Each structure stands twice: as C-alpha cells, then as structure tokens.
Length: 240
Image (tube, rainbow, N blue to C red):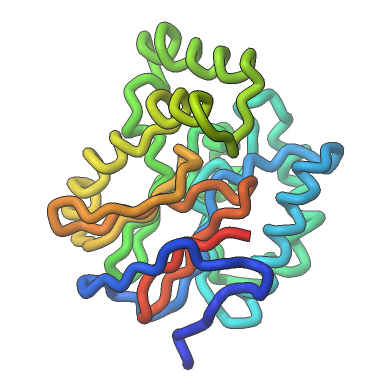
C-alpha cells in the first residue's frame, strides 16, 4: 500500500512532521472535538459535512479512524440518545460495517458510558491517542467549580468563538485552551505506555512539540477544520 496518502483536495497541510521514532504500519485519520449536537445550526451542519467527507476519504483508503474525544456534546445538555441517533443517521451506513473506528472519550462525551462504546485511550503501533482532559486540574472538583467553570462562563459571556485573534485568543490560550498541561503530562503518559508519540485533543489548538524525546501532537478541532493524518511518511496537521 502507498502510505503517502495525501489529504482531501480542499484541505491544506499546516505542519508536516517527520519523526524518526514513529511507527505507523497502518495509516490513521485522527479527529477531535467535533462536539456534535444537532443539525439546526449552520456551524453544526458544516462540521457534519467535514466529518462525513473525511470519513469517506479514510474508508476508501482503508485507514484507521480515531475520534480523539468530545465527538459529541452531552456536557452541554444535549440528550445522549438523540446525539447517538443523529450520529448513526449520518455515519451508520458508512461506518457500522467498518471495523477500523475507535472512539476515545473526552470530558463532553464521557457521559455516554458504554452506550457510546468508547475507550479512555487507544494505542496503535507506538502512538498513544488520548483526549487528555484529565491533564487539566480545573476540569473537576473544587478547582473545577472555582476556576475552570468561571473561565468557561466568561468565555461564553464574551461570546468568544473557537477561532479568534488578539486578546481574545490570548485569553483562550492561557486559560482553558492552553497546551501547557499536555506538553507537561503527555510525554510521561506516552513513555509509560511504550509510545514515542501522543496525539491529543481538548484544547482546540492544533500544534506539536517534542518533549523529552516524545512527540506531542494536538489535533485541534474539526469545528475549525483541523484534523491529523498519520502514515509512515510522518504526521500531517491539516485544515480545511
């Protein structure tokens, strides 16, 4: 099989990383933070179209598809069964008979439990896939209510979009959507699992960094058109 699989025609490669320690015997499409709800808003319909197009592209090439958490948005108050029904309506015919799909759970879709058939993390070859929300102390407990929740509420009050610039971008990147915790804790997680690379989500900020000999990659969010393609040629951070 030609592993230099490229990307969908209307997307571009933002970063291409050639990593000597990477083992990718099977090509992978990694998608994170779709936050699926329903089809009533233009933004959601755009996200669905991107997902369907990407999954069709991956299935045609026999790729592993890894959803790296927060595929759906139960935490935002949407009923799990309604989201699952919508998901299967769009993907069922294409993915139900396809055995190369893995759902890692994030902090927004973990409420699905066994009904979503998701896993906490997933290892393929020497790559660890994990949403990584548990790296952020302000997601849970006392700090979640006193620090994390207020930050999210401020973001909602300011109506900050996921794609933004200037001081609004600074606020997002230095609070709830900072990759610092992933760069700090991800390498240890990967090393303990015998992996030389970890692919994460959660922050909606696509990026990569080599830390202590471990390649740390963040998928960004498909809501902004971000996704990751992995093959023996390396890792490509892409965007529609």
